[in-house]
Length: 113
Image 1: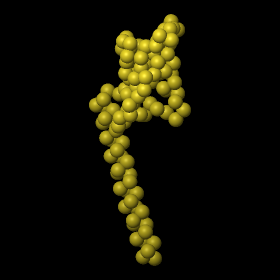
Image 2 (image 1 turned 90 degrees about the vertical axis):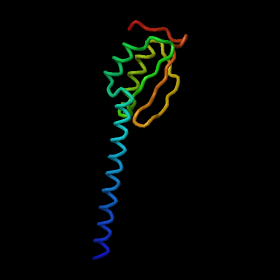
Image 3 (image 1 turned 180 degrees about the horizontal axis):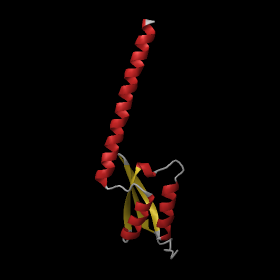
Image 4 (image 1 turned 180 degrees about the vertical axis):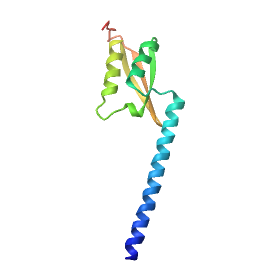
């Protein structure tokens, strides 16, 4: 009986430590996203692109929360960028966000759609 009680107590303590550790990491990542200015919604991203993408090389800071399991958000963003004549040029992973890089491509003609 004592072994069961001790085992349950240990599992509870380990669970509490794991929860607080993951919460701490999540809080830190959210703070990094806020400080970086990373975009957190699809609407915010599309608006930013429309207003700011003017040069031959551009970057886009996207919060990790935008990278959904199916890639729908990034597909919609990439569709917009391809129509504007931009091609992917890599990315850097940071804590809580990614920095996506794009270049104007002579192979892509900007679309009016």
